[in-house]
Structure formats: structure tokens, C-alpha cells
Length: 95
Picture 1 (spheres, helix red, strand yellow):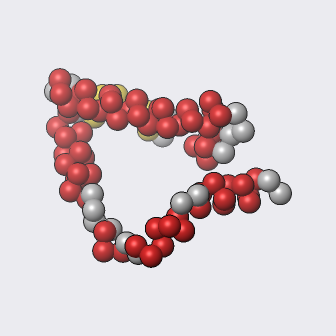
Picture 2 (cartoon, helix red, strand yellow):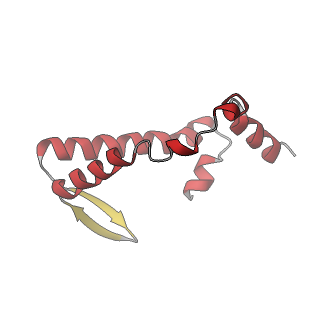
């Protein structure tokens, strides 16, 4: 299954498993940084070792990018965002 397939799965446990895997990956990166150890991931079928220093740099870049899109906020549209995803998903899948 691809990420899109999992996210759109009908079984709630399968659909939310992507969220759990992302949370677990984030926890692994944080632990690797805290213990100054590398993590190993699979990219394009290859094992790739990522040192703690690289993870630290990526975390700094992520932290620095928070709020970067704040200039595009449209407060008048915030109320319309409530339930927008659910409505779009229902419209798409309940045809």
C-alpha cells in the first residue's frame, strides 16, 4: 500500500496507522539526537545511515520554518476551515 492508500483506508486503525508511524519516526529522530546516535532508514530500497548531526540540522531547519507562511493567513476564512476536510472526504468517497 502507498501512503495515499493507507490514509484513505476504510478501516480506522489502518487509516490512522500512518499518523502513528510518523509519530514513531519523530520519536526515533529525537532519541537519536538526544543520544548522539545515527538512525538507519530505507530510501529507494537502500539502507541509509543518518548521523545525529544531520538530524539536528534538519530539526533546526524545521524549527526555523515554523510560521514562515503566517503572512498568508486569512482570518476571515478560519471559520470555513472547520470541518472542511471531513466534508471534502465525504463528498469524494460517498458517491
